[in-house]
Image 1 (tube, rainbow, N blue to C red):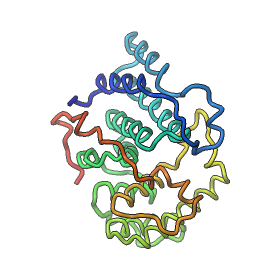
Image 2 (spheres, one colour; image 1 turned 90 degrees about the vertical axis):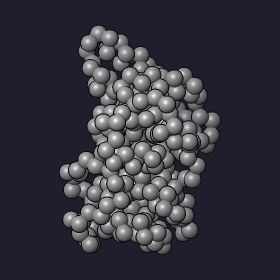
Image 3 (cartoon, rainbow, N blue to C red; image 1 turned 30 degrees about the vertical axis):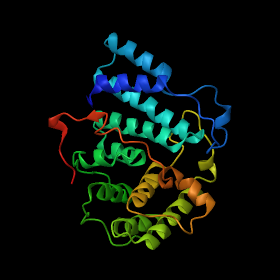
Image 4 (tube, rainbow, N blue to C red; image 1 turned 120 degrees about the vertical axis):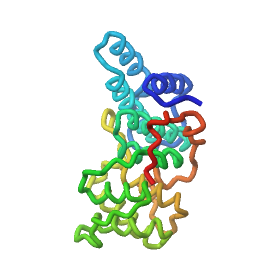
Length: 264
C-alpha cells in the first residue's frame, strides 16, 4: 500500500499508462476512430516531469497538469469502447489527482464513476459554495447528509428532477429515480443538440459527469433501469453500467493520517 501524494501519484499514472493499449471494443462516441494513437498521459507525463525538474512547475502544478491529462484519457477510453473496468480505473485516478489539488467536489464525482466507494467516505467535508441544484444534490448524496437549504420543488424541469433524486435515491424509490434520470437525460440530449454522441478531441469528458455520477449513485443504491430508452441509457451509460474495477483505495493507495477527515 502506498500513501497518496504528488510523487507517488505521478509514478503510478506512468506505470499504468505503460500497460495501456488502445481499446478494440465498440466505440461509444462517433468519430473517435479517427484519432491516431491515444491522447492524454504519455507525452504529458514526460513534459511535466521536465518542467518540474526545471523548477517551472511546483508539485501541485505538476499534479494538476497530470490530472488534466488523465481526465482526457479517461474520456477517450470511454468513448473508444474500453471495458468499463478499464476506463473507470482512470476515472479513479482522475479523482485521486483532483483530491491532491483540493478539488474535492469534482474528485467525488469521478470517484463515484470509478467505484471508489470507500474513498468517498474519507473525503473532507468541504463546504459547497455552488448554488447549482445538481452540484448540491450530488454532494448531499455523496456525504449522506440532507441539505436543509434545498428547495422542495423547482419550476425548471431538470432542477426539479435533481431534487427528486435527492430523496428517491437514498429512499431506494427506484420508480421516481428512473423518472428523474430520464428527465435529466432528455434535457441534456436536447440541450446539446445531438452533439453528445460525438467525440470531441481536446474537449472532454465526452460524457455528462454530474448526470452519470448521480446515475452511478442510484445504481449503488440498488437501482436497475426498467423503462429507459436505448438513447437515454447511452447518455447515462458511464454511470449505469454495472462492471466496476477493484477499488484502488485503500488496496493500493492510503491517505496520510492528516487527510483522513470523514465526510459523513
